[in-house]
Length: 300
Image (cartoon, rainbow, N blue to C red; front, side, top):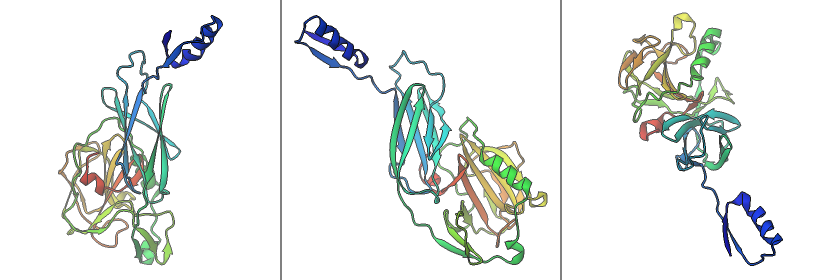
C-alpha cells in the first residue's frame, strides 16, 4: 500500500497506519518548492564592490499572498528590496575597504519565508598616499550645514531606478587618485578613512558630465559653507544609488532638475579641500562609498 503525503502530514500518517495494524507501506515525502530563489552578483566580489542581490518568488505558489517586499540583511543592517519585474526583487549592497574580507552571510526574509546565502568577499590591496596640507587647509572643517545636507543626500532611497546601462566617465582628464586609497595627512595615518571615489585631473573649467540619469538632489556652494566639498552636485540615480561631484568651479544645474547620462552639469575646479584643480566623483550605495569603476564596466 503506497501513500504520498506532504512533510507536515508524514508523521501523523505513519502513526495512524500503525494504529490500524498496517506495517507494510511506503511514505513519499514531497518537499515544497522554495518560494524564494536568491542570486548574488558578482560571483567573486572584492572589497569596494557593489553586491547585486536578486530575489525571485515562486510564481507557481498561488496560495501565497505577497504583502510586502522581501527584506535583506547584510553586515548587521537590513535593506528594503525593489520590484524590478513580476515576482522579482533586487537590492544593491555596499562593501568598502573598511570591511573585513571573508565569508559573509546574506539573509533574505519575506513573510514566513527565509533564505540564507553565503558570499566570500575577497581581500584587495589599496595604495597608500601621503598628503601634506598647509596649516590653513589642515585646520579646515566642514560646516554643520554641509555635514547635515551631505548626510541627508547619502541616505536617499528613491524607489525608482533612473539609470540605464553602464555609467559614463564624468571627465576626460587622467585619473590621479583611485578609489580606496588609504592616507597619511601630515604624517598621521587616517585610520577610519579611505578615498571615497575617483579623482580626475582635468583642465580647469573642463566639462563635468552626469555619468547616468538621475535627479539633482543636492547643490552645495563654497560660498554657502561647503568648506570641504566645495562647489558640488549630488545626483540621485534611484534605489539607494547616488553620485557626488566635488571641487567644481561652475554649476549648471539646480536642485530638482532631471539630468540625462552625458549631460554637462558643471565645470572642473579646485574649490573646497583640494590641493589643485581636480574632479572628485564619489558613488554611494545605501549611504556608503563604493568603487565607481565597476559601474563603468558591467551592468548593475
